[in-house]
Length: 353
Image (cartoon, rainbow, N blue to C red; front, side, top):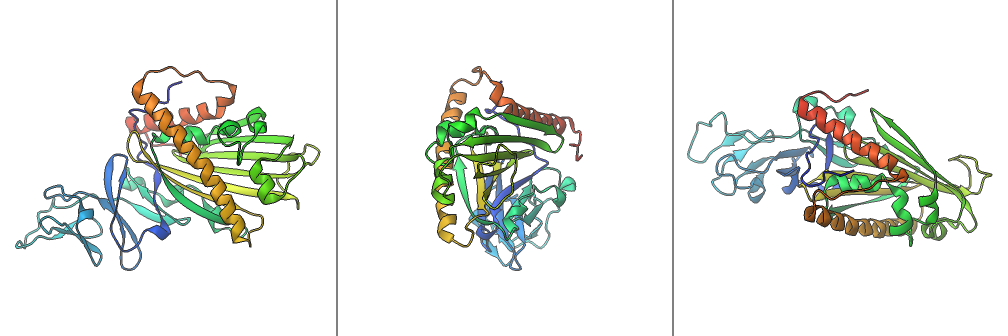
């Protein structure tokens, strides 16, 4: 099955991460999202703002201008725009043409992230922001990061919904042979795709040994929730062997949540925002940092894979792919994204059920 990764359309009517909240300040920040130049900044009272990063006068990026209070002044001829994108001042001219404005995008701040809606503003419902609320759960410690990926967003979503690759790409940290051999349960619904793997009575991966102290065989799980169109929440954990019971709880249990938000930049590049949480030894910052560095190492291994895949697709866009039984969840996710793309291109609203 071909990923259609070059070129690829985008689902516009959805929330995408534009920045980590702590990284957005009262200063202009340029970012490209879905091939569109976007200007981000905070107002003096802290509200996030997103505008088209192109002056309507002579097309110079507004991000090359000056932030004056809450307004943006173009660095070429001094046209000044308010937070909505409306031009409010032109040097040596009192009358402002009604069409002198740039596009403003709906934004909201939730779960320590700034989210942007690139589609129809009337459909920008904050209730549709993906659930990353674990970042506000006091039982979890966490660290976060941003990576720039040389690959289409669908390649990354593919990767996150096929954790059998952990056995081969990440064998020195979070993976071992048990992952690829485990049976997979897949549930495909309107809200997204969920898959569950249980690895019963298997050796712990290196990261589990180093940070959780597991020595003998353990029971381990992965629960992957694909939240359309480009976010993924992965719950993982382990416990001392428990007679094969599928049980997430217990005093000998450790749990982690990995959050992934992929924002398309272009047809061949992506913004990759992620966070890693853990619910054990949360009062030890060194443990949080150690886990973060191991996960970061694994994700940089993935970046290499994305770049190799993207180069191969550009070289041979029609190259054939052969899928296997372990790809069931990945194929369900691909079909889900394709349905959303078809709904959007036909003008039909996506189901909220």
